[in-house]
Image (cartoon, rainbow, N blue to C red):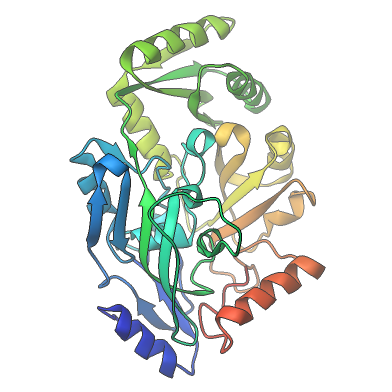
Length: 367
């Protein structure tokens, strides 16, 4: 296992590498094949520059997410996209890294309102499969022509190169928040309620539904008076549901923290799936899929679920209606990512060979 402590060491390792390498940050999101040679960025750690007034930060890719969040919290700021953490499902106890978050484009419940992780990434430094250093982007959002490698590498899962440094946008923490809880709805009624919530002008920042508990969550964030007003208006809209209550800021934050940790899913060596689908199709997809446990996020646009091993649930996602990612399985026959055919597959393979001609980086991941 390689633990480079500088970018130059990463260059040296990749320049000389002839055998496949599994790329890891905190080693909390991908379970590399047994016997793999792993290169970890965990020693490429530290905040390089932080300008609270400019709402930007630059950090080495292996910086623990907890360190980033602690630094931001001291200035009343945050990573607004609130990334998920599913490390307990792959039995890993490491610390998620900021580079890993962007490499996997891990976006949490707030994506509904603020966008994905990649929308906050401003610039990158990386080492490609030949050992070349590449820099793209910077400290500010720009609209320019040319290749946007920043967006390309967000979500590439280390298959195109190893991130060594990232610059990204941060936001002020909301002054307060509250969550409305509607009780007793089945999946379809909950989906209808969440769609109704998104159609309001009240800037909803989280929408989730838990079928087992029959609880539908609607979160609003912002200034105290604004949150109070929006909660009152939303309660009026949903007064048709008799069992409805609100959670104060502390309880609301705990609920959404638990959602980010997938705490409601109780695994018994099941496979972990994430389905990104059209909200209008989500209940039909669930009905066809034999989930042992599941819940909805993003207003029904995201389904987290556990299924018995060796079942590829992607067959239940119609073409053009979404895609599925298997984030934990012991089966070698189920690929992690949704397979693509024809032109798209060819384009992806061409891009991959451009950055990694030796095909040594996370070779086992077919994105």
